[in-house]
Image (cartoon, rainbow, N blue to C red; front, side):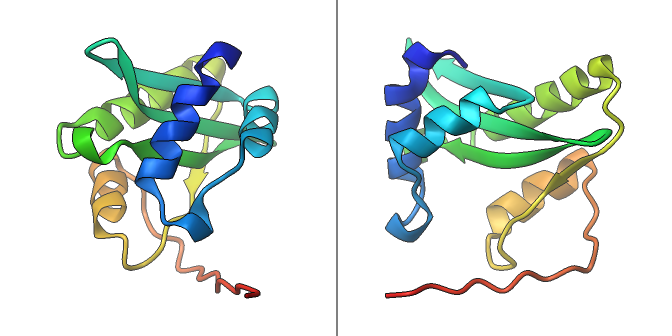
Length: 129
C-alpha cells in the first residue's frame, strides 16, 4: 500500500463496514505510517481489498482487513492474509493477532482457515451516541 492508494482504500473501507466501524482518512494515513505491513489487492485495475498490520513486540496485529462487497467470496481476503503471514515469517515475526466480532462468521471462517485459534478473550464494545 502506498500513500497514493489511500483514497481507493478508504472507498473500500466505507463500502465494507457499517458507519460505526468506518475509519477516517486521517486515521488511515496514520495507520499506514505506523504499519508493519500494509498491502492492497487489485482486480481489474482497481483496489478491491486491503490489510494493515500494526507492529507489536515480536509480533504483529492485523488491525484492518477489508474486501469490497463486490469482490467478496473470491479468496481475495484469504490471499491477503496468506501473503501477510509469509511476509511476517520472512521478517522473523513469530506471532500475529487479530480481533473480530463473534457474529462476523465470514472473518471467523477466514481466520480459522489460515490457522488462527481463539484465545478465549472477549472485548466488549461500547458506543456513545
